Amino acid sequence: MKKKNIFKLLVALLFAFALMSVSCPGVQEEDDYICSDCNKANCTCAIFSPYRGVNWDTWGQYKASLHVHSSNSDGSSSLSTVVEQHYTQNFDILAITDHSETTNHLSKDYVNVNNGLTQTRFNEITAGAGRTSGKPMILIPDSSEQRMGTNTEEANAFFHPSSVFGGWVGDTYPVIMPRIQSDNGLAFVNHPGRATNGRNDAAQSSNPTWINLYANRFRTYPFLLGFEIMNRIDGDSRNDRILWDNVLKVLVPEGRYIWGYSNDDSHSSSEIGVNYNMFLMPSNTLEDFRTAMVNGSFYGVARVAHNEGVNGTTGGTRPSITGITVDQSARTITINAANADKIVWISEGKTVTTQTAFPATLNLNTTYDEAIGSYVRANIIGNGIVFTQPFIIKQ
Image (cartoon, rainbow, N blue to C red; front, side, top):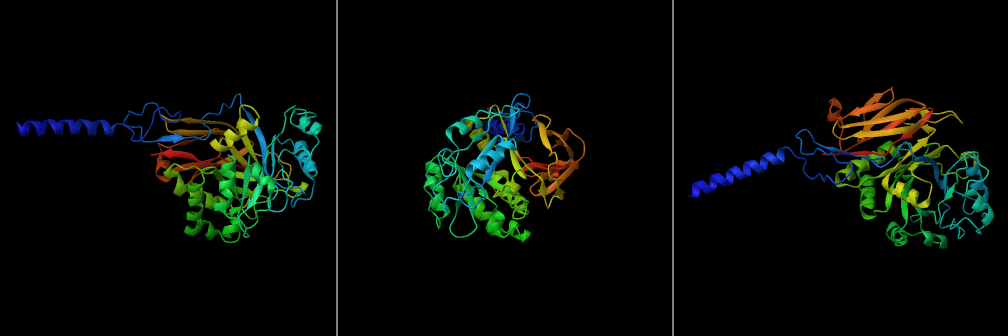
């Protein structure tokens, strides 16, 4: 009798093991980025795409400048002049991020602040008046650049009304970040190469001390969304993509995704338009902007990227993404682009492959599979460069 029961138990265990061998452990089919036929034995992973909900046919692409200074801190032009300059250059989204420790006159609502807009002009700009396209420009309220202590660590905060009071020089991450959180604000790390000295020493961007420091900060503060991977003409930021990859390697397996931002950090009119972010949204509203910023449904664009060998001409047409398709069952990522010469697929800081024809498809079932770790991202290169957000490979 005992032998019979043992035999039944063994049969049950073997049957359970057989079921496990043809499924994807840990995969929840209700998530829209998971392969729908997960019970097939060949379904070994799923691809999480930050662009998974984007409708490329009906959604707009909105040009955003998210690191800008006026004379309210250390910029050369008044707040109203800076707004007009971005409006003339066809930006759709603008956040003026003056330093919180140098002024009390920050971009709370852009109206009736020091050198700010009149209410009439604010209404015209946010309605798209005087533009051929008729597209409005939204102004992100309660934005500022926060300095951590007296060193070079800084972060941009958005939707953070407490920042308008200023006077917080000398405060630290554990002091400033809870303030942003209490406002339900958002933030990203600015030009980390200044703090790490990665701008002068590439090895610092792979230094475990810095990697662990930033990984812990992203773990601690979920509203800290990512890194500024491009800053100005890529002087301070030239090795910050290395740091980004290194932190992604640590955090992606934990389920924490870090987005990359491309910003002018402009202080004068000549510095506007070198870098920007293209936000993919159903409409250009503050609500849709916030959603896209959190979800990573945008891509960065830059004229110059030193380590990638890119030096685009002033005023030239930059590459752009026109469509992204992820096929879960085929395990492919396809990107279509305009004004592009090549695409470089990167995983965990290493080049997987380079392609020169578009649409460009990365097939995870090929020999590339061995070169791909927990994520893959793409650099699209032409007269400038586009940086996608990371696509997460869920093992």
